[in-house]
Image 1 (cartoon, rainbow, N blue to C red):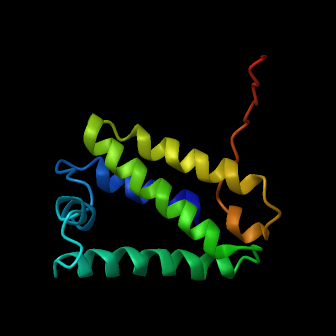
Image 2 (image 1 turned 30 degrees about the vertical axis):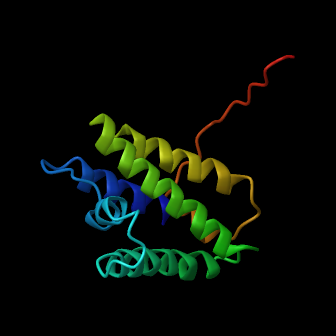
Image 3 (image 1 turned 90 degrees about the horizontal axis):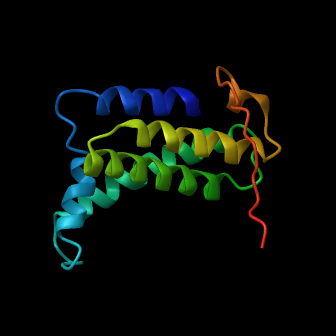
Amino acid sequence: MVDHLFREIKKWADGRHLLCSGCSRIAAELADMPGHPARHPAHSHKMNIENWLLDRFASTGLDNPSAVAQQVMILIEGGMNLSLIHGDTSYIETARNAVICSLSKVEVNEKLFIGIRIPDVRYVTASR
């Protein structure tokens, strides 16, 4: 599910007209106007996506699907926004890898990883 989701986001972003999420752009433009009526649709849209993720993660048996859904939303938004800023959609793939790495450390139901190849991650610690 996670792999497919990020592949689809990257495919969309690789299109000719990457403008990032309109909802995110509107909310950013109106950040100093909390009561502005245009902020409500952006909030509702993002909450719908987060709730959709929550439902999917809850069905896999995760201990804290709400926190995982929030973390994935942060990485989706960050990947899309940095792709827009830098004109480089590899940030979406990097966000995908971060989600998979994070989830690989959690004991989860195998359904979450169907179709996903967990990358070989090497941990490097800096010496003090």
